[in-house]
Length: 219
Image (cartoon, rainbow, N blue to C red; front, side):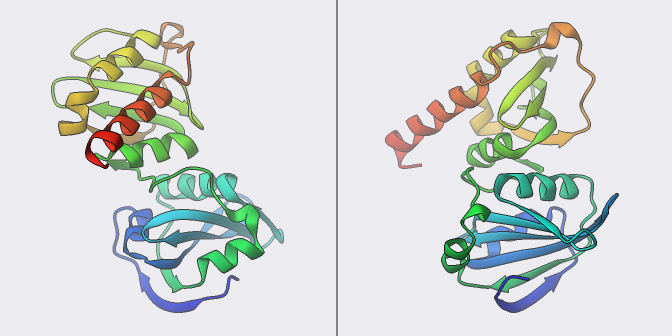
């Protein structure tokens, strides 16, 4: 159990991680049942950004920290295993000084769906599974493994596959920033033609777009 002041418990949400945006400094406490037993997850938040994570397995008396812990929490969220979220006020910097392994390496607030570039980049850093990206006239599905895109194909507007599909997504970035949306899902049916050889191309390309927006508009 982490130190902190209990503030509230929330049961009405579509994505529990979105509650992090309401926390100035503290953490979310989540519980769920897995195949191995009851697990408790902590998501440390500072000024609406996720900065640390911890998962404790109650029955097995073990724990994991940092990005690995957040990936497990995100998987529980994706599978709709979270029924309630407790919110605590806490000295996050103090907790991270005491438990430095809890710190996560990604930046932003990953979400199961959204329209924000920073959230999508944060998702790529921790997620393992399928994602659908669309902007109305075009759509693609990709399979991600912790920052690396392993497969991709267009499902609307063109027939590009593999690296060509990733390049098309990057060419359409201007439209996606205005009208795009991403959603995680059980998209896992990909053919050998969908294999992506340059698996870090999408993340690197979007990081460049983010930096360009920041320098031009202060994003």
